[in-house]
Length: 338
Image 1: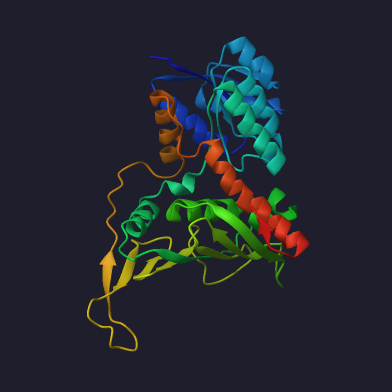
Image 2: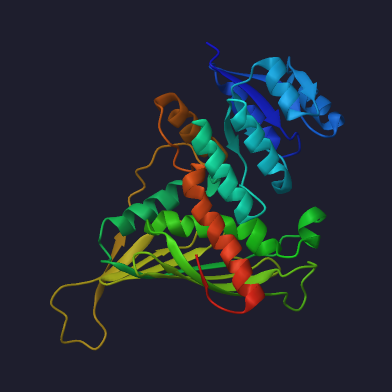
């Protein structure tokens, strides 16, 4: 039974995942494709055999199809216009990250969502992995005590070509949002300040700064340290980063690929210089789907249940604040309060 009448805004490569997902749902129908390049929309329509209209204007598409849900898979610079238009016209919006090109735009989008009474949720697919869920549960169980220091290393050397190669801050603006959001998710606290130094190392093929070091203070008193490079060739980390969380009773480790574990202090060793520890494996109990499909499942479930999604814009803006705060800190060369 059709419940969601969907307009897909943006018909580039990323939209394939969103369209494929919608087509597997019996309660959803794609009623329009919107792209400033109609050839992209026609190619998408033919690829999936869709029976829908093709438009260049989001407002016209919503009005003529009586849509009630928009997938925003456009470029970041278009998100504000697409999202606010759709919300004001009575549609829910599910969209790709990053939610906006500036904090001013992000705040306005959150305000419009609140005023409209409609949902705007943002894709954070890297929260929806069984191992990061296990890592979070391991830490929240208290087995390592109170977390005090969170460290993430991200070192990869992808040769994308295209827009990333000419961005001013390709690592922080395009990729670090994932790691920053994961840090919030893992710890369950919010950022309050940041100091960031970004730079472009020797050998980089990017025009802008492809490496950075960031230090965030969180609301629970913990500190999050991020080291990253998008031009690090050899000895790569996982795309999920390599994580270490030290607590008052031990340390939790996740290499971004394998099952997380921790080493915790054993009892009755207070007379030793270096305390003995025991290893505790994380339990991978989460059985949801991973990646985009897992996040989309959560978004649709939230709509059906009348609740806020885990990645609702009012929450995701806190991850955006980490990105733009880091960029401001790097520009000004000082600590920034968030």
